[in-house]
Image (cartoon, rainbow, N blue to C red; front, side, top):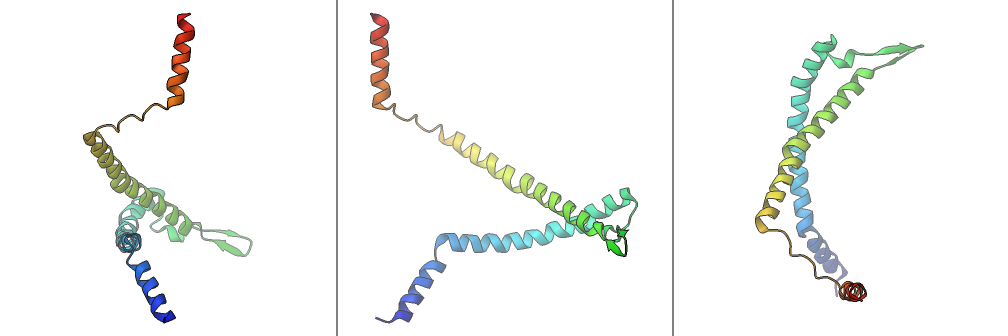
Length: 133
């Protein structure tokens, strides 16, 4: 028995699992989606917000503490990017997917009610017998 062939077989089984392939595809799509959203934020949203705030570029927003300079503008840009990315993911991915799943469940009908446990049925019989006394 060749330990290398067992190792290669195990690696092949790992790589060809459905979840690993799905995760790899999701990662590639997420990377491409991230570029689109980042460009949208940097080229459209931030200039609008910066125009309202009076600064053409948030990276220039900073203040001095002693001899040091705190560049808070970069942080503000990152927070705005995060909020916009979260909103885009929620409204264009999560919300439509939830609506689709709800529609599919509605189409399939409600799941059949679970059978009442025997203990519950016996307790109901005892309750009813006590009421009828």
